[in-house]
Amino acid sequence: MKFYNTLTKSVDEFVPNEKGIVKMYTCGPTVYYYAHIGNLRTYIFEDILQKGLEYCGYQVKRVMNITDVGHMTSDADTGEDKMEKGAKREGKTVEEIADFYTKAFFQDLEKLNVKKPKIVEKASAHIDQYVKMVEKLLKDGYAYISNGNVYFDISKIPNYYQLSGKVAEELMIGVRDTVEHDTAKRNPFDFGLWFTLSKFENQAMKWDSPWGVGYPGWHIECSGIASLYLGEYLDIHCGGVDNIFPHHSNEIAQSEAYFGHKWCNFWMHGEHLNDAKGKMSKSNGEILTVSALEKQGFSPLSYRYFCLGSHYRKQLLFSEESLNIAASSYRKLKSKVESIGEEGAYQEDFALSYQEKFKDAIGNDLNTSMMLTILYDVIKDEKLTGTTKLFLIRSFDTVLSLDLLKKEEKVVHELDCFVQEKIKERALAKENKDYQKADLIRDELLALGIRLKDSKDQTTYERL
Ligand code: AMP
Ligand code: ZN
Image 1 (cartoon, rainbow, N blue to C red):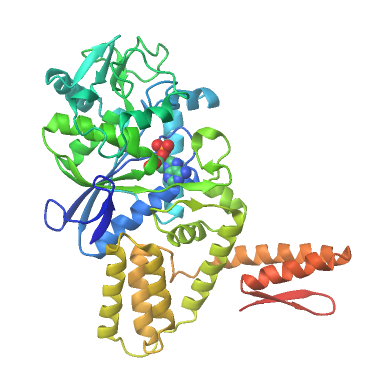
Image 2 (tube, protein in one colour):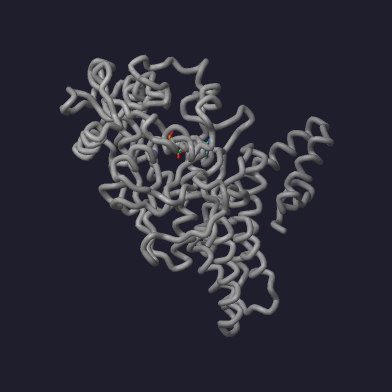
């Protein structure tokens, strides 16, 4: 299997440390608000990766953190703690905010058929581990105390910029004007391992430590949780591309300094979902959530299908129109599958050969659109019996997770509501003698596989 490795900047053969077992760490959400559909694109990519590895015979041990402390509004350790900000906004405690948005996050994952990792751990539950690590980093000369806080000294790490592939000067251009620098740092990219009250007086979540009452930095939580649950070596670490710098670069620096050896061979990053304004982001106000999509009549799995249509390493531009197209293809796919009957004998040779092709698509840097093409090939292959087709669809759906064999009354209902709305809109256009608009609506529906049939006093429709 080959995947693109951000560390080497090439598509590399994937070989885990222990035969057949993959230790995978995926950065989890900062739970100060709902996850937006951009965040969820990253979790869909990681889900397909986990399920793809399992499909190819690996046992995947996966861990995810929940960030409920220490993530500042700026990744460069300045600004407020995002959780504190969320609590103030809603007049609740940090714990209440964390509980509420953690639940909402897992509800969204469930709707998108994203499997919850077996081990999910809150950052605030592992303070002892971070303190232990910070103590060792200080003892070994990788960290220093300044203005009451403990910082990691990146000058001690010769390959600090390897993951980002950028030099300090290039990175400075990105932050110089936008970020207020923490003057306690020796180098602007040194990062906080432990903050004390000297920095944020009103922090709600705080713990005692050898350096005073305070709280951990955002980066140490992932290294701490990963080492507690997966040991000294990781096989794959994932996240969205915005995590490459500084978050993942800092995780590597502190983990390798702590363990004294290489930590993780493979780093995989999902590209962003953008909207017309650019990167979808929780901090810039309006965000699109799964519930918002549902309110607009989309099924969450239409969004999953939309994401699978493009490669995880390509930016994906979201618009209602493109989601509409994906939703229509998804509905057509479901109805094609529905029309296949359990008929004829099971053809083992054909099935094995298609399964091999599917595995090749997984091992081809997680090529989801190729996986979908193989699925469509199976559906239209005249040599295959219905029984073999259904076997393969069930098999592929363990990775795609599109509920292909589930009879979805909800999807049918949504489609009906959507078409009825369009029929009303067209009737109104006709009433207003706007025949151009009426024709446009008819053509728009036709492009989605829906043909309108006008009779004397009503319009009905059929699915093509
Ligand atoms: P956060 O909750 O902000 O810590 O982000 C959770 C995950 O979503 C991280 O892995 C981010 O890299 C990822 N992410 C953030 N914005 C986007 C986006 N617009 N598209 C895809 N992934 C994103
Ligand atoms: Zn992380």
